Image (cartoon, rainbow, N blue to C red; front, top):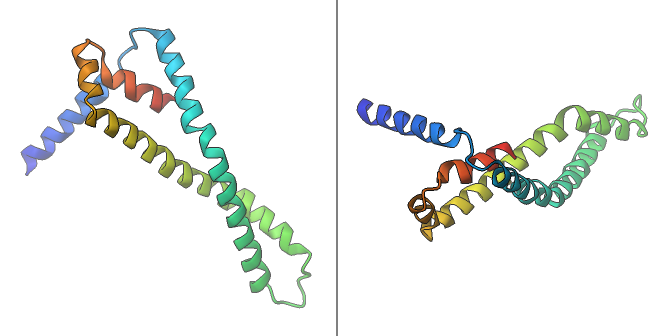
Length: 140
């Protein structure tokens, strides 16, 4: 049990060493980074917009429903929702959405490449596949 744990930790450390070595060709590395930024970041914008609108609508309804007080005017509901969205919810929800979407995209891409033996082909050509595939995704 303990031996297996240390073996896994050692394999992880060796993988991180392979990932964070200096890229062999910087031009290809930056090109891959730009492709990954577009694929992972820009395609997430519509999803984040739709979910943000839904969260804002639910927050407005809940705030208006829970503030049934004659001393608090209804016109302050929008102000309270805006402040709570800007200070609390927006950053957290965008981070959670991006973590889920980007993580699933990366794992499906690498899983598909492993299944179709593209990673093995890169290794046979002498390309550091961990550095070529993982580092641009981490940087972007």
